[in-house]
Length: 240
Length: 339
Image (cartoon, rainbow over all chains, first blue to last red; front, side, top):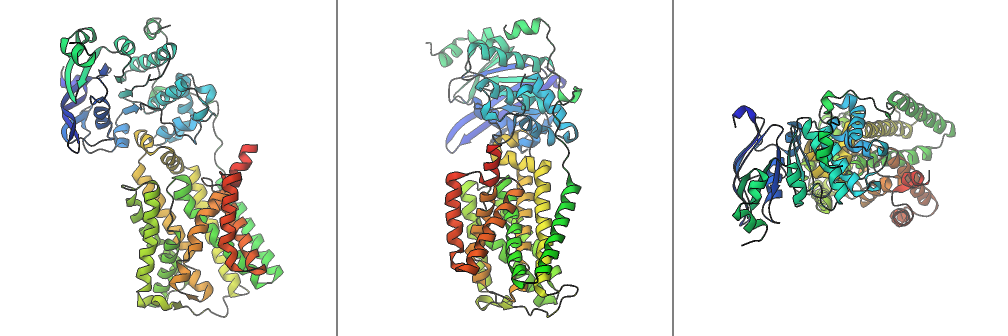
């Protein structure tokens, strides 16, 4: 992979919480427009890695770049403006603001305040929530709240979207809805890192799979090949 | 239909906003700033004319009392109502403004109006410093820190002889302030202008992206930051504005009473009213603190002239209990729920 193709480059990323090493020496590169699945058992460091990339956590070691720009030391809002969007394991809407206002917020702070309402409506149309623009987030169903999270991410016009368990707790049909939106976003040029425990969703969506165990990357490659690796089966699926 | 099938079927991919040519079906009307300022100026002029026609000095006193709380409550609302950071130290900021005016008068002989500007600057800087507390402190911990700040300031003032220390400081009131009919009317008009400015600033904050950013911070600071909201910068702006306006509310205090001591300047009543008035009127809206200040300020004045001012905090306490039980979102929230 040439440097020109690389969108995200994480080199030697490490994170400790007191004496506990949550991440150690993680290297991941991502091409522009790539679909990466990130899996691993609970506590393996997936969310910690995502939080280091998004700026929620300051990593202790390593270097991260997005589109060639160094992310180390940047606040999450600066990373968002560089084109890094994320969703959360549990939807985190602005509960006192309408659905439309929820999507206007990122637009207001990304230099698009003049046309924020029109653009926010357009984002809502893309996730099929335009009819509920005036509702409050608590009036939405769970899958609609997930779609609202995606609409806010779309509003950031991201180069990279990190979807952190965006399908947790959803039914089979609802998972398909979210997968569809992620595919459409990816088709528009956005690279996606999907952190997910639902293997059907990961294997259907990702073109490359990375596996974390105990804060380390143990596999990286084509999904079927990775899932058949003995160390992945042993560590992640619990087989001997 | 699975995602793959849909993709293969060739449905249009998501348009990125930068390339989108969309038309909003529901575009909010632009805020009517000019109308607001004209209405506020008209209402202010009507109040001045009305009180002059009544010709009773008590009217100016009661008006000043209520307007002072409109400034204080509007200031509190910018940080507490919009951003959700509860400031228990309103009395400290107000006293900082009052003692800045006293110190300026003593050092330079400058009068009230420069004193108000200086009070805004000093209390605004104090507010800016408080803003940095939000780097580490949220929720109740931030509130306790602001309360501690007020206690520290009071201790400093009590031991600062230059501004009178614990004995207090005097400011000699002029007999006449032309073109006003009395000193009471002059102070009323000064506080009226400050109240209009404070409410106007609060309303402007609410209707601009600053207000939206603060509301996002109140609802979910982590998500706001992830959505590109510069949370620290907005909080610093809010704490600075909040502090400056509270200082502005306090600057005329020694000029109005002619005497100020630390006990009066750091009175618990200011801290309690600054929180209770927006909560009862409806926090998070520029109109809520105005309604709360008029209602609670009016009730306290009525109690003062009919029974005793000792009942003031008792009234505030009961009103808070009633509103928490009946209308936890305040008067505005209660009406919005019913409409």
